[in-house]
Image 1 (cartoon, rainbow, N blue to C red):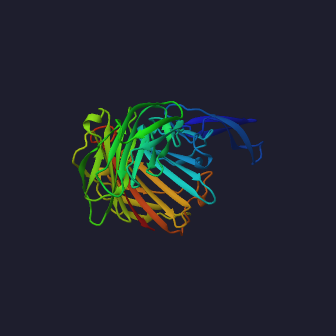
Image 2: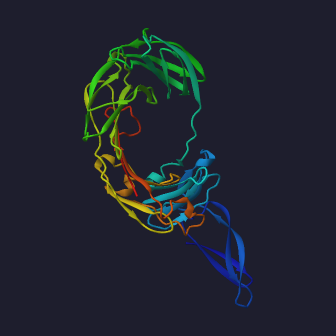
Image 3: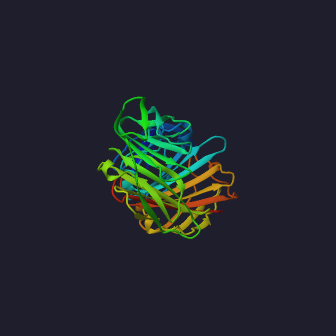
Length: 436
């Protein structure tokens, strides 16, 4: 414990502060009451407290500096282990605080327009919190625009999808001119795919390798009958783990380049227990190219998603993760709607889980998320704590105690580790929703 002495005449008052210095670093005005003279009375005296990091203090940084004004926190608190929530004051929308225990959490509030508010609560291990600055709104890189014209579309029902450096666009028989926005600087591959919404068998793919991007430019003519184009390969994909009565949609991508950029081959389309996927033949592939299939299945209240990467287009089964069971929703009481969800997380989703609820008007949302490392097992209980006694907090930010609305729980997992350009890399997620 840190002790500071403040002397008035012949009197000294001891001021006790937390050892991890959870106040923002810097000089902060503080007020204490001290005895005055020989009579029984007190006077309030303000002094400047300089708080600096020592030991394990201030080892976590959370930044909203790059966020638009409407997405910056108006209030933030931190929780070290099983300790109490402590409000943290930001400096230029950057918050620093200490998590000295094995795990901890943050809670913050973002206000939108009118009465809209979002309460975000996140729990992680100390190692996860201290692995680097948590930038809630990373500064987006500068992007470019490329124009061009598609030829080789054989009729009014044919169209082409074009992707380059993170940007994509669409061209049609009647509107063959195109502009691809959102293209990042660097060296990228142009990927094109031609299809016909009225029939099958006329599909055509296109690759233009190593397009150098350092400013806006043109791709000139993109010819689906020229030397850059080729007939795609195809294979039957079987969807594993389907439940009866679920809708199924599927999307097809081709991942290229050093940064594993996703190029759209087939955007979201209706699927089923099996469907035909298109890809790039072996002769046109580079070693670092990967196909990726994303499948969504669900109902009005349950949704599951799986994405899987593979180099060679061939018949395969892609299996969805398990469905989430409905959680037990409890009302914790208090000055605002404090809900808790208790559920068991299937083994497919041992990366991140979250519980979210929103009032009926849709203007008050609570999100509570936790890493699997924080949880330490498949048993999950996530609930909103009572912040009403904390400085700066407003009960109006949360749904009112009597409000009704909707809730959802979410889980994610898979074996993907940093890149989709790894053989059999997969990502799985599931969500289930209800009302309260």
